[in-house]
Picture (tube, rainbow, N blue to C red):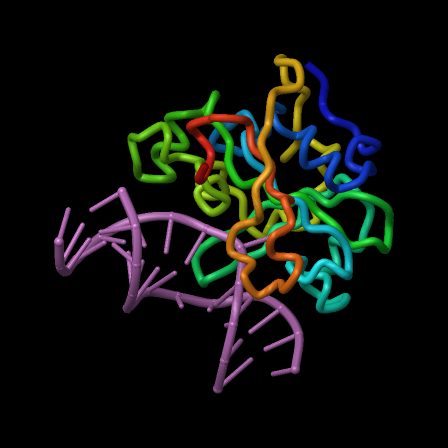
Length: 194
DNA sequence: CAAGAGATCATCT
DNA sequence: GATGATCTCTTGA
């Protein structure tokens, strides 16, 4: 299985979000390696997308999204949680894919400890949970996905059947709030919601 | 089971 | 000073 290269992330954000389904998210950490199958993603596309943070302009926080594809955009929200995004498309075009849920495959014990939960389905079935289970925080903001700290591997399975849904938690985004920019593996029980 | 509240802080106005 | 790309717990039926 190969590490995904930068050219993959340079595709359109929708394509990246869809093709990430079934691939493997890997996090290498001194405490051990955690790995999971990506089952749910969301696309945040450019300056005109009112749900995309970068629609408010180029700021310190959104800077990474304006940079080259294949880097991590990690931000902190609600005073508690980190969110993991993978930057897509070309330089100066701010877009990214939010990783919303993964199915835990390796490092499960480590995830259980970090999450203080024994329920497999509860370890990474949500963007905040997943960051907790994988020890992802803002120290990884800007990390190169072609490096050895956090990256994605090709899944063994061929392209899976998927569903689309409106994105979660973006009621403020006007006509953008109902766009079907959320992608999930059909019927997968590790998704954050159906 | 569904709905609601509270937690808590970086970021931008 | 307001607000969130969330989660968990509590309540009530």
